Image 1 (cartoon, rainbow, N blue to C red):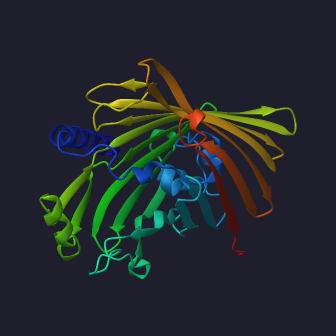
Image 2: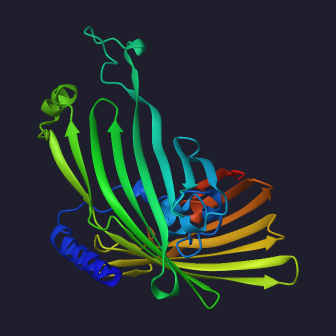
Image 3: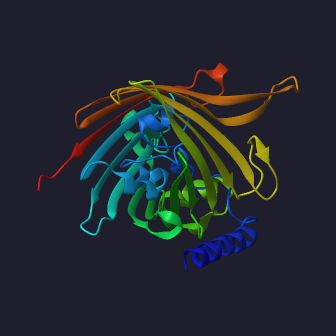
Length: 359
């Protein structure tokens, strides 16, 4: 039965890709692909096969089945572009009585305090700074995740997400979107494998434009004002593999690889075609007594063309550290979100807290 469902999902994804690829904008809802959790950032965001905490609601909902605590809470903050944009994440997961797991996650990526200078000049042509108003361009996502173990194939973890997306640009425009994700995890001969289908039926964002706010500007520029539009986010598939190694009595090593396949046409990735593009992410975690961790990873490989016509490859490097003290985990990651020469560095902090209920 599961095999038949997976086949049906794959066929629906292929049909949707073929029909919508020409009309769907590339990089739709891309804020949902920024990643969450400082541990994941430190490992180059290669998480689909081994994620085992509350952040699995984002990376692979099947990983929620490996939650070690009865309940777990996580909070994360990161600032981008020198604090111009702020990225916040919070999630809570808990085990249910039927041995399944339920989680709720919320994300916000926003640029706040954007100046609206349309009324900067008064009726007499003078500058009046009191007329400047401020607004935010913010993207929100809310995920409800459910996971459980099934007995197929000697034990298989399955999970899914229902996600609601809200995007606003001040009082000028806003959208609502809905989508579904599906994930699997399997351990076999010391190897961990993961498969995630994101936006498996396509995620649809319905935009509405505030005509009263923008009509005057559109008349001045001669552009056409569209008050309604539909944006489609096409499916992507993540394939992951990882393995842990015990190094003596106190040390451990975890190595992981993710392959992200997008279906919205040719992207600037390591492997690309008109049908799909493939982007690898590699990471490692070196641990001491499961108390302290050092992490590293690379991903986001892109070919950049310089002004002189020459081309070179860039990538996103990531490093991080983590500490676990009883029920509290504190993680930090340092990452370059752009070309290494540009110095677009970002600091990511996250905290996880375990809660256990005594019988």
